Image (cartoon, rainbow, N blue to C red):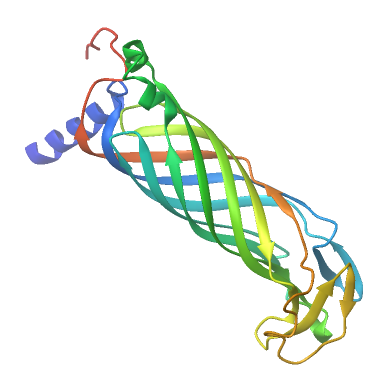
Length: 246
C-alpha cells in the first residue's frame, strides 16, 4: 500500500511540476489532424467509371524520436487517413518515413539566456519516406499512386508539464509519384500516366513507364500533436517562476 501511494505521489509530482527544458530525451507523439490533397492529376474511382478528387479528411499517426541536447531530433513517423472504411471498396492514404527536427530557439539560448525561462518552443523539420494513396474498385477501375515524398514542417510547442507537451504542427508534404498508376495494386496491373492521358498498358507495369511524366500533388496536413518526453539527462529549467506549494 505504501509503495502504491509513493508511486502515485511521484506520478502526480511529475505531471504537476513546472515545465523544464530537456537536455536529451526520447519522445513519443500522437499527431491528430487533417489532410488536404491538392492535385489536378491524382484521381480515385468510387463509382466506376466516374473519377473524382482524393478526399481530405482526418489523419492520425505515431511519431518516435530522440532529441540530442535539446537542439536536434531524429524521428520515425507513420500516419494514415482512410475513407469509405465500412464499404467494400475502401480507400486511403498513408506515409511512413523519417525526419530531422531542428530547435532554433533552444540553440539561441547560448546567446539569449533569458530564453531559458520560456515554456514554449518552435521547431522546423525536414523528412522523407514512402507514400501510398488509392482506392480499390471492382472491374479493374481502382486507382493507386505510389512513390516517395518530401516533407517540410513548422511546429509550435507548449510545455504543459516537464514531460507532456501540446503542439500545433504545419507539415507540407510533396509526393514524388512513380509514373505508373495501379488499377489493381495486389496484381501489379495499371496504366502509365503521361501528359494527363491514361495509356492502356496492362499487365505488369514495372519498368513500362520509365521516362514518362508522373502525377503531381501536394498535401497540407495540419495537426495537433500530444507528446510525452522521457528525459535522458536533465539541464536548466525552462521556467524559473516561484516553486509551487502542495
